Amino acid sequence: MTASDPHYSAPRPRGSSLAGKAYWAMVQRVTVIAGAIDVGYIFLFAWLGASTLAWINVLSVLLYAAAYGLIGRKQNTLALLLIWFEVMAHAAIGSLLIGWDSGFHYFLLLFIPAIVVANSRGFSAPIVLGLLLYYLGLKAVCDQWGPLTPLPGAELRTVFWVHVCLVFAMSASIAAFYRRAILSAERSLVEQAQTDALTGLRNRTGFQSQASEALARSQALGESVAVLLGDVDHFKQFNDRHGHEAGDRVLIHVARTLQTHARGGDLLARWGGEEFLLLMPGCTQAQAEAAAERIRQAVVGTQIPIDGAEVPLSLSLGVACLGPEESLQSGISRADRALYDSKHAGRNRVTLALPLAVPA
Image (tube, rainbow, N blue to C red):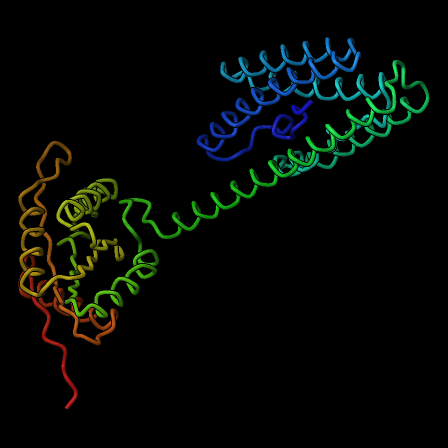
């Protein structure tokens, strides 16, 4: 009867195909668990002398096996119908045969959270109302005609406590599942908010959320920290001449080049437009200048095929080595002024920022 877990009854969540695949993989696993528990019910009811319910659980196991196979073949709607049928029929037959006090009806209540969560187009209210009417109708029928094959008091109490324990366990499992889903969605949203969609690098927000901590750690250790700010030369003219799609290919190429030359502990971001920022903890000015020159040469050394022609690229860079107590924003501002000097001096070059002025 554990197949009344609402994971079975919920329509497929709308959203990314990845989320849908994960959901149905989870449902398949739950069908296995539910089928296994129904196997246990076969032995329980055979031991209690309720042979009809034992045979019903044999049918339930077969239905779950069929639902498992249907989900594997992407026939999810038919699988859902089988699961709904099994749960509702099982609850009704069990309640009618051995009585409302057996607790079979508790499993129907587990549908409610999944119905509400999974239906995003206003369908949850009528579905829950229909479930309520079914529940109340089943209670009325059981009061009128049940139990048809009652169990002795001790055996009935055994079934009741088994159902109570299973419902509590399943409720905890459902809550844990939705909590994991919420936390996963939250992490995904945070990641998306901090990632540049085109290049896959950190955006300005994502960079700043990690850079301050990295800078503080390096300054506490007495390490030097360098900032590299690079800008693709003549990018606006490139976009105007070849189109934005070609411009996107250039940005992706430059991003990959920077990733290739960044060290493991460096923080790389698309700073905005055609600008890229690289924070290099534990890097001296000489090392930063050499790294910037390697990056510049790597960009110049490749050409992007556009419209059947090889289009040359170049990158201007500004490099600043932060002072012992200098803020990240101050270092970036000095690297930006050095980048401006590279542009003003003819582009395709690396310029070192002036040392930080020390107050008299």
